[in-house]
Image (cartoon, rainbow, N blue to C red; front, side):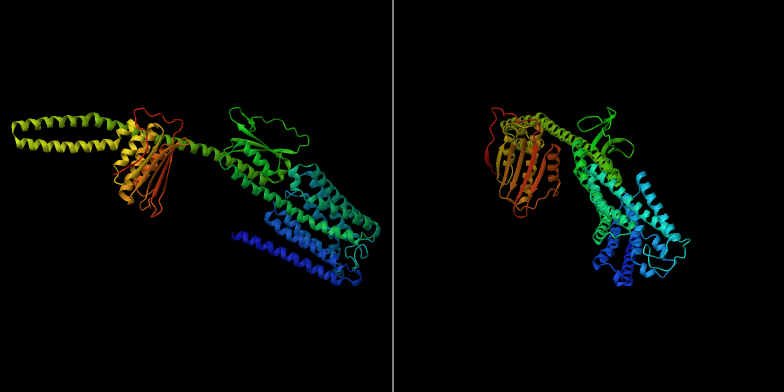
Length: 611
C-alpha cells in the first residue's frame, strides 16, 4: 500500500473515532446534567445516541466506495451537528456559546437533506437540487441570525444565562421565525421525498434498483419532521412513538446511501463478467444481450458503426432512428477507439449517467472486446497462412522425394542393372575362355555391384516407397513392418486410397515410430493400427517396451509432430515408465473422401510381420 494512502486511511480513522467519542461524551454528559424529571427514557436516549454512530460507520464505508468524498464528509458533519441537541444543560452557563449552538442545532437536518439530494452521484447535479440546497442553507443562516439577535433563555430555547448577542426583546417575532424555519425545513424534506418517490415509481428498472431504499427512508423521516414542525409551532408534543420513528428513519438515510452506492459498485464489478463473456470477440447479438443483463436494463440497445454504409446498425441490421422517448428517460453513450474511430452507440437508461464509472467500464469492455475480436481474426488468419505454408512445404518435400525416387529408379538403378547384366556376360565369356583370374575379378565386381544396387534400392525406398504410390497404406505399412526387427501386428483399414499427402504423412510417421521401437523401446512386440473414423485417419502405434518416451526426446518425434500438424492433425504420446508407449496421430481428411482401391490391389487385413 502506498504511503499516501496509508496516511489518508489513518487520518480518516482518527477523524471517525474522534467524532464518535465526542458525540458519545456529549450525549452521556448531557444526559447526566439533565434533571431526572426532564430526562428521556433510557431506550430513547440510547437510540438517539446510536444515530450518529450509524452515520459515522456509513462515513467510513462511503470514504472507501463513494463516488466522491462529499458524502462521507457530510456524514461526519452530521455527527458533529447532532451534538447540540443534548448539551444545553452542560453549556447553559456559557453565555457566548449557547446562542451559537442553538442557532445551528438543526444543521443536521440540512445535511441530511443535502445527502439525499446528492444521491447517488455524489454531487448536486441539477438545478432543482441546487435550489433546494440553497433555500435550506439560506433558511439556516436566517435562523442563526434570528437566534443570535432575538433569542432569549426560555422554554422555546433553553434554561440558560442571558444571550450576550441579543439586540431586542421580541419573543413573538422570534417564535414566528423559529416556527417558520422548522416548517420550511419540513416542507423542503417533503418536497425532496415526494420528488424522489415519484421518480422511483415512474422510473425504469435500473432507476429503481439504484434508489431502492432511499425513498422509503426519506418519506418516513420527512413525514415525522413535518408533524414535529407542526406540533412545535402549535406548542404541543409530538409523542415518543413519532420521535422514535423519526430517529429510525434518520438513521436509515446513510444506510440507504451506502447500500445504493454499493449496488452501483457491484454493477461495475459485473463489467468484468461482461468482459469474460465477450473475451473472444464482440459477437454483436451476444454482446447486447449480455450488456442488458449486466446493467439490468432491458431497454439497452447497441448500434454498431458500419463503415460501408456510414451509419449505426444493431445486430439485426436495423439502423438507429430517432428516440421514441417522450419523457427523456434514455441517453446515448458513444464508444470510439483510442484513435477516434467510431465503434458503437449504446442507448441506455438515463439514470445510469449518474454512474460514469460504470459507463466508462462498459466503454472499455466494448473496446477491448472489439480489439480482441480483431486480434483473434488476425491471429487466425496468420495461423491459417502458416498452416498452409507448412502444408505446401510438406507437399513440396513429398514431390521432391517422389521425383528423386523416380529418377533413381528410372536412371541410376536401370543403368546399374544394365551394367550388372554386361558384367555377367563378360564373366561367362571369361569362363569359356578359361581365364580364372579374370573370372574372379568379374565375379567380385558383380557382387560389389549387387551390394550397391541393393543399397540404392533401400535408399530409393526410404525416399519414397514405390509400394505407397502403387497400393497406399494397405500395402506399404505391412511391408514397412516386415523390415522391423521387432514382431509387429498390423491392422490397416483405410477402406481405399487416401489423399496422397495424408498417406505420405502417415507412412513416414509409422516409419519413424517403428524405428524408435527398434532402437530405444526394448520391446518384444509392437502393434500398428490405422483406420478412418469421423472424417479423419486415426493412426496408433503401440509397443510393450520400457516406456518413458517424450515429444521432446529427439528430432524424430519433433519431425512427426511437424508433419502431422502441417496437414491439420494432432499427435499425442502416452508413455508411462515401464508400461510401453502408445503414439496416436489424428489427421483430418477434409473434403476428400477415401477413393476405392483398384480391384487388382490386395485388400488390407490383419497379420503379423516378423522381423
